[in-house]
Image 1 (cartoon, helix red, strand yellow):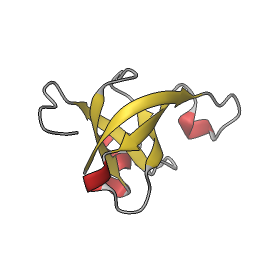
Image 2 (cartoon, helix red, strand yellow):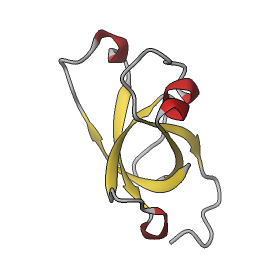
Image 3 (cartoon, one colour):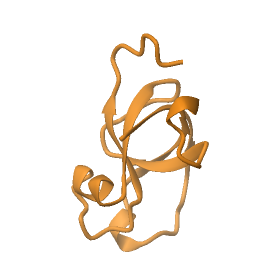
Image 4 (cartoon, one colour):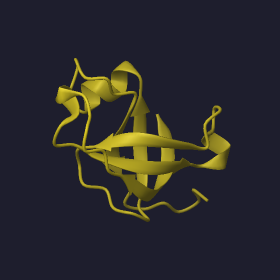
Length: 88
């Protein structure tokens, strides 16, 4: 699991049927947690807002965590961090 900060959103009007009705957010992965990517697009089923620190699951954990085991999801916001003391 990664920690990141939501910095924006992505709008996609044409997408896979399994993704219709979902929100996509741009997440800056915190520098000390990066394993390659500095930013990623994560599906958001919990209502994270821009500027919030979030927990992001990747791979099969993202699909399970978002309740979409058959959807093409590689990253999902699975939690909003209430207290991010010491994260940055």
